[in-house]
Length: 332
Image (cartoon, rainbow, N blue to C red; front, side, top):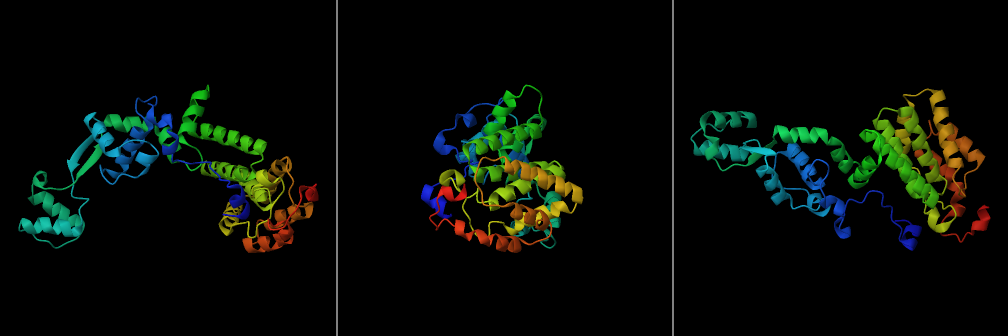
């Protein structure tokens, strides 16, 4: 945690899934499918794992359900079928079963399982059950897959997604709704002057566009996020009202990711993306320490320089370190 984060006890909280302390009623209410969010996610989890044990902690602390009892309820309601399975057993456990039935114990796991199935009534064995979704449950997961995507998404919450979906008049896709949420979040970040949050939101927008295959426009948001970060605005500007320099502000992986995206684009595409990012940055109502010379340097060097080289270039702004007692008037 940096100096100003400690000083002002600030916290970026774009996507806090721990709702236990807030008694979040959203997770206790039914969705349009007739299930609570926790029940829907539990059905999806069962489809992926086949288990009714070793449940992740988020079922209790985020989704606010008792996964064991809820799983049993869903089974009784006909969402799952269950059958005994050998696939969860270890090779040692399989060989123990074979040995007890005077069968050969040599071979790989698949061979051991086949040998048991062909020679032993597995219904009489004390082995785990495998749960599979019924047709009704499978259709439910398909029909409401957008809610499941929203829960596991890194950049939005399931609750916000549900509210936004209900507010949109047309039949929007998951991507449409997520983009609407991110745009509103970016607007709030800008109005409040939370440029650290804005940098993260722009990165999330870039990530979303990249996932949808729109590399050219994704690059705009990645570049804007990077410019905000190195301009001093990301470092708790809303708390200090002036930019703050921190060394090594460009992570190597972030720059390399941008450069990888550039490889699939033309020079004109890059110029377009940089100009758009610069325009968005220029209309922010905030002081920063980047000069026109710096912007020109970034335009030329983003595609070809290392993070270390650019960070070294920015060391000239060490005078803006939080350890220096700088006044806002110095930047106006």
